Structure formats: structure tokens, C-alpha cells
Length: 323
Image (cartoon, rainbow, N blue to C red; front, side, top):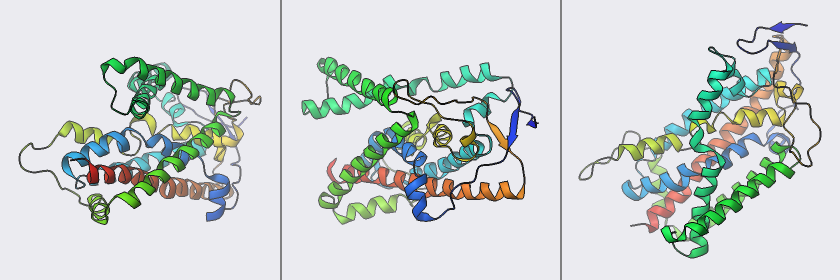
């Protein structure tokens, strides 16, 4: 078999790159859309709902330019992670494992690095918001049991999605698409009817007020600004997990690798942990350029635009109604 040297993991086999459907804008919406939506759903979180409003409440809209830089840098990371997956059929984390000193070191390193972002922590954070709606006020220490009940419910709903969803990717795509449409659609309606035009303009202008920093008494909360810069968009290792979604969607060489089935109800799928790479021929390079058009569509037209909208809408409400 023809192979390519694969670093600290087994070598890649070589095959031809599967051809994508011919690119046009409408087809991208109908048949390819997916990984960007899942990443966008994950992005509508701490950056948009907690740190963005916190920044806006303290400083108005003039520091939102930090989000502009963060989101544009993050989309470069996203697209390059996807480039690796298109070529190899592997998530980019597999590429990290191929580097020295070896997979055991990097597996331990990334588990520790992302330990704070695992599901139970996310479920508890979301449960606090749901408990506030249920109680009619922000939960206090005495309401700890209520928050825990909602956290367990959220955790098991997420578990059900991946247990019974067929192919895990398909279940995530449908769940995230519903959440993105519901959340952003609701905020658009609220902002249109309740937020004055001057607030819309202040938020829009803030995304392009590069270099502006707060002056006067109180100075700058650098810890808050740093957290805002990190989590605007997706942040952390959340960005590179988009390569896992691309693999499960079957883009590029991923079509030859397989996908992760759910435990209950999923079809039997052979998932290779080792990908394959394509021969560098004019035909394969042309196919790669066609796949890359879909990548750019998803990342720049879906993820980037969605991140700016998801950041702006809660910030408008904060600027309009929070003293």
C-alpha cells in the first residue's frame, strides 16, 4: 500500500479525494450546512451572554472592537483546523497526537487544559439561568437544590441527544440549528421592538472603534477584558472541535473514514481512528478547492456573521436597560 509518514501515529494510507457536489450558494445552504451551525450554537454562550453584557454594562459599546479582533482571529483557526481534516479525514486533535513527544503526553495535556469546559460545568451554568426564569429572581444560596435539579435535567437531555440520535453528528446539527434559530430569532424581535435606534448605532460603532479604552476613575478591568477577548466567538479548545464535526459530516477525506454512531439507535458504522490523505494531483487539488469553497461559506457567512449577531443582540439589551 502507498503510505505517507504520519509522525507519532501510524502512517496514512493514500487515496483519491472524494468529489464534493459542485459549489453554488443555494446548495451550500441545502446540503452542506452543518459544522458552522454546531460551532455557532456552542459559541452562543459565555462570551455573548455573560462577558459581552458585562463589558457593555461597564463601558458601553465602545470596547466591542475586542470581539471583532477575537472573532476574526478565531475564524482563521477554525478554517485551518478544517483544512487538516479535509486533507487527512482526521480531527485536528489527531494531528496534535502525531507530534512529539507522542499521543500520551498530548492527550493528558489537552484533557487538563480543557477540564473546566466539560459538560457538568456547562450544565450547571445553564441551570442557573433556567432557575432564574423559574424562580423569578437570580438564585441565591438557599436555591442550590433548584439549580442542581435543573443541572441534572440539562445533563440528561444532552445525554439523550447523543444516545438516541442515530449518528451523533446529525442529532447535534438538528439540536443546534433549532437553538440558534430560536435564540437569535427571539433576540432580534425583542431588540427590534424594545431597543431604540441610537443603541443599535452605538453597538454597531463599537465593533469598529479599534484601540478605544476606558478613561477616568475606575480604569480598566484587564481581567474582564482578557476573558472577553478569549471567549468572544467560541474560545479555548472549543474552536478546534469543529474539525470533529467536519469529519462526521463527511467532508473531504472524511468520507472514507466514517462517523461516530449513537449508542442506541445508531447504525453500525466503521470509524477509523487513522485517516487517509489524497494524492497531490491536478484533479484532487481541484476537488480540494471546491471543498474549500464550502468551508469558507460555512465559516465566513454562517459562523462569523452569527457570532457578531449573537454578540450584538444581548449587548443592545444591556445598553438599553441595565444602569
